Length: 310
Image (spheres, rainbow, N blue to C red):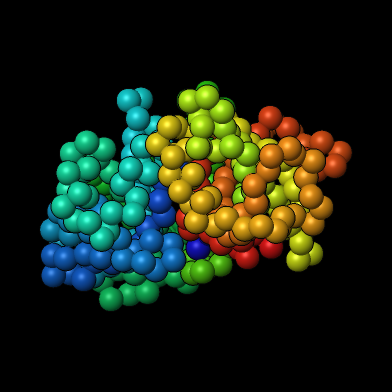
């Protein structure tokens, strides 16, 4: 079940919602067989169990009941906030168990559990959120690499101020009466982000200079509408050195002679790529033409394809 972007519910209806901190990590479904083993699957269904060996003891801690739990795998910074840039060092290691084990010591992952959809042979998707949340809390899931973060009913404005002041990504508002709609981006879950964020498609890039020679100095991004990719601006900040280097390799592999945008952007020295890479950018506002103002790179969205944005 996925959340729909939106605004904070008003004071008149906020008591109909529970508010959870929006974590900045990798969405995961946890399958517990009841025999002391587990499987961790990414949003697209890929088995990523081997990428996170520190989660394996969770199966023994959970006990003998089969279950399916929903959550987010995060890497925490020094202040206990989820940091996607740190987690990127762990993503994609399912095929390299030895490296995943080494990285677990350097960048430990933590599983934030926020829903239970199957428990002890019983499918719970038709139960309202409030009942599922109660069952989840009764499980008492707290361990060295997993926990159940708090949810607050009502008090949305206070929760919003808390996440804003703490530098967190935002809130998820979940309607108390909502069922679990598997595979659906539902209006019963609303994600409210502190920063304005857009998912964009990379259509080109501009080479950097000096120490950035051979690397992207900026990427040219667009948003798909009516079957066309419309230019939304140039993003040149927000990367770590490692992420810029990784992105350079992906851009090189996607090189293409044709401009993928509906109208060729007036950018000197632009190099074009096949429009298949999706990124998430932060921005302050938009121009009248829909261009992003002061965009900053946030992360590569390996869980999304361009068709997911239409």
